[in-house]
Amino acid sequence: MKPVIVTSLAARIASTYARDASILSRKLARPDILGPQITIKMRKILKNLYILSLLTSILSPLIALASPTLGLLLALIAMVELALPNIAVATWRRMLGWGLDRETPAVLTYLLPYASGPKYLADVIVGAPREHFTWLRWEADRLEYLLSLGHDPLSALRELARTTPSKKLREALLDYVNTHELGAPRSQVTMRLLERALAEARGQWRGYIELAKGIIESVVALTMSLVVLAPIGFMASKDIAPLTLIPAILSPVGALALISMRPAIGEGDTGGEIPLLAVTGAFASTIAFLVVGWKIATIILAVLTIIVEYRSHLAFRVEEKATMILREIAVGAKYGRFTHERIAEALPAASKVLRALISALTYAGKLGISEALINVYRVLEEAREARLSSKGQGLILTGVAVLTPPISIYMINMLANLAKGGEALGITSNPQSLAVYLAAASPLIPVIGAALWRGRKLSLTPSLIALVLSLGAYFMLG
Image (cartoon, rainbow, N blue to C red):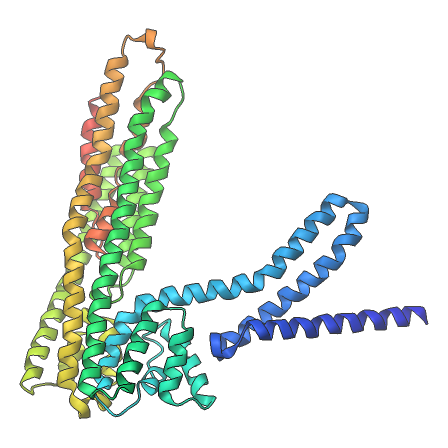
């Protein structure tokens, strides 16, 4: 009888824990804050974490009887598991806010054709094509849920703005709601959206350029610091050559990160094939240098440079042609000339924005697609000018990154010459190892500068120039 009672008691306790965990997960994951879809998934995860935390906390005193250290460790794990649900929700909200901030200029541009029409903006956001707006779809689902609770479109937008993790989207929505509630004409509402879209496009590119400059300068500084460390390594008879791996790895990784973080508006969507090919080519050249020799490394890099430049050139031509077509369409729209067929030719210039706009042509065409296209073109042109302003800075920083490896090798050469015959200084280490590693890493270091200069149409030409210059400086050691 006793085993049955114990089993029943254990089942009751487990049921109580499961019910409490379910209640806690419901309080933390709410559909009006997270949206219905993510709430269902999040509640399952949070419930399991709460149950796991309770079980671990029960086990910890029992384990402590046999091993106090292990019991204490389990207690700490239980505390971490208890905090994980809050961390999970906060992490998702931060990710969503970051993604929405990046999409805001494109979202505002997409909303422009609807601002002057009778359709509520809340309905437009709910019906926004999910495939073109990766992050907005989560807030669109949440907005749809708020509308289903009985909110009118304006109050639902206000509630969405109040609880969204994106500061930029919040400001844009509140701007729209306030203007609409004041009874402003729809033309003024459209103008406010346009101004906001233009400001967001400029600000996004400005912030991106500053971030990229800081990362590139850090990689260059790390490379140059090897020259400062070289005398110390020589005197201590320590080989500091492996330290060159730090900037050599940070540069391509940083380049891919910068490309992935580039603003979604103002640049054609050429995919990730060219950046991946360029980074792979730079890595292949470095590995070939260390394993086979500098001749094979140079040949590999030269061949891949030609391939990458050819593909980038084709991508440039497609984007320029599309931009020209978009300009012609925008100019023609002022005089009432517009054909739906031609706008498809301009897709590479606008990427997601025009793809989403095409899905709205049936609606927007009746309400003035000409005005909408003119506004869209203004935003795209503003973003494009902001992007082009980064090319000059990117080219200068790329040049600095190209010169950094050969200059570092040349300075190491000077240090080695000064150290010759200077046994009194205690210098016994050979600089050849550091010079070899720097020369081998030279194709990788300029890649991050090229990411700011050329974006997704990455170039290996700076890497090839850096390798040739580094070989020249390296052979001066002989």
